[in-house]
Amino acid sequence: MKEFALYAGCTTPVRLPAYEASVTKVLEKLGVKLIPMKDVNCCGAQYIESVSHTAFAAMSGRILAIAESMGRDILAICGACSGSLKIVKHELDNDEKLRAEVNALLEDEGLKYTGTVEVKHLLQVFREDIGYDAIKAAIVKPYNGVRLAAHYGCHVLRPPEIVHVDDPENPTIIDRIVEIAGGVAVDYTGKTRCCGGPMLGIDEELAGKIGTDKIDNIRAANVDGIITACGFCDIQLTQVQFGDGTEGKERIPVLQLTQFLGTALGIDAEALGISLNKISPEHILAMQ
Amino acid sequence: MDEAKTAANTHVPSSSFAKEIEAEPGGEDIAKCIQCGMCTASCMVASVTDKYRPRKLIQMILLGLREEVLSSDLPWLCMTCRMCEERCQEDVNLAEIFHAVREIAAREGHIPPAFKNAIDVVLKDGWMLEDAYSDFIEDDRDDLGLDTELSWNKKFVAKLKKKYFKGESTK
Ligand code: SF4
Ligand code: SF4
Ligand code: SF4
Image (cartoon, rainbow over all chains, first blue to last red):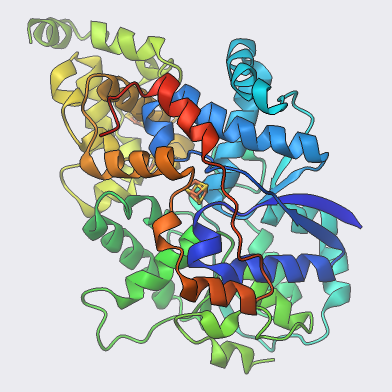
């Protein structure tokens, strides 16, 4: 069984534990075991990253070094975390001075960054480590034509020359998995645009407008639900549907890719935390 | 201001501020910008608010409007979504340039309050959501078969705080 060190990040364990649980259960079903990382710190995305690039590199660098000490590649499930860890890995691999500075900070803990571990986002593990054929073979409860819009997440896809997840202008991994599980992957305007999540901590009104624009575009495509592969995006696309001006509008359920796939693999909805979803995806599950 | 005028008049977009940005990690490519506006056209922030125009921000840097840029909240509105970078024909890394601007602004004491608070929290707790982690959520985690002990490391950020944030970002 292939094993990864799981870096769950700050947001998912607290705001979206169902995502963490569904990832763990779905991957286990597909032959990938996750070992939760202990004694880690925030990757430093956005906030520390904005004010001290060196401190940011040290924070993500420490996470990479801990994975090295575990002898495991990292699986990151939040777009911001996977992006940070990959960018910092790229920098540490190419900038000796930065690597020396980070390693000096890690020394007294007995940690060292040497560059031996890979960082993968969940979508890569599906495509590269498990493969579409194995996913297909494991489906026991397929969907029957449910129409779903994929939202990939900016930090999952970009910058493509560093993250290497999918085509940044025309991503396909989520869509393929939706189809493999018996759904219909529906295209919509602005598919690769941001959900507005990173704006939440700075200007809620603008974040709301950006998220609402995304929801409106998805709504126009007439879908049964939205599928995400990032905790932050899931939270944002859900909560903008409860903000000002949403009264009377039908809410579109947001499902994590692993919740959607999990039920098709025969995993119990309760174990995937589906009852915790703020917009009930009942009609999606009824199409199985 | 004189510098800005000269630069504008001679159409040579290379102020000393642009040079300063060029010297920061991530700021290297700023001089490649040809001011085509593709970034603004692809930016979701620009599409929801008139005040934010990434092309214009780059132009202000090229023209050397140092104080105006550093004291403004605008460089902090970029979501680092990199849609503009994907579309820019000149390979200008706008998100990185705005990070370089933020880093200089932070050194000179201009950090918007929302950022300052989040930075203080991370440097104190080692992560973002210690205060939000309630008993209620602990129960949810327990029901889902997840660890309820989140075990975040605080010591390392304390070390970073001492070394890289000598008082300026902390209360
Ligand atoms: S990117 Fe976000 S979720 Fe990931 S560790 Fe940093 S603050 Fe937490
Ligand atoms: S798209 Fe690139 S070249 Fe065009 S204005 Fe923006 S940064 Fe400059
Ligand atoms: S990276 Fe920043 S400037 Fe570029 S499109 Fe995204 S929010 Fe706009």
